[in-house]
Image 1 (cartoon, rainbow, N blue to C red):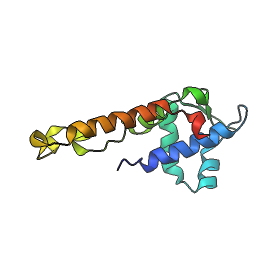
Image 2 (cartoon, rainbow, N blue to C red; image 1 turned 45 degrees about the horizontal axis):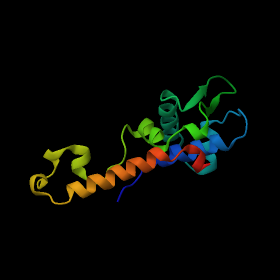
Image 3 (cartoon, rainbow, N blue to C red; image 1 turned 90 degrees about the vertical axis):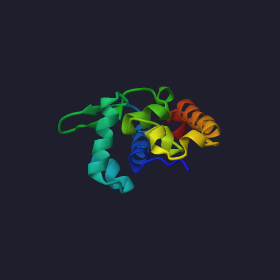
Length: 134
């Protein structure tokens, strides 16, 4: 089963919260952490990765926090996942770790169909936007 990491889940929750704030309101990591019970340190790291990827803007200072850098309709879920994890979740170990990680890779009869399933998962993440989550 394909499973999103807690980091990605927390990132999507945070982005949904930020995007749901009408206008250019700045949201703090503490506010998000407190509202959803997300560990602050982990959330701060996720938000830092999203900021570095240009999905959100980090505002420094006393009234600092985060705001969206882009229109939610322009942010693909795949972009969010890649910003946080660096890769899309995979359904088989050989797809992430390579053929050497699988003892039966050379005789495997399911790698071709699973590759198609993986491509469909990646297409789904690429076609869905943050606006659909908000």
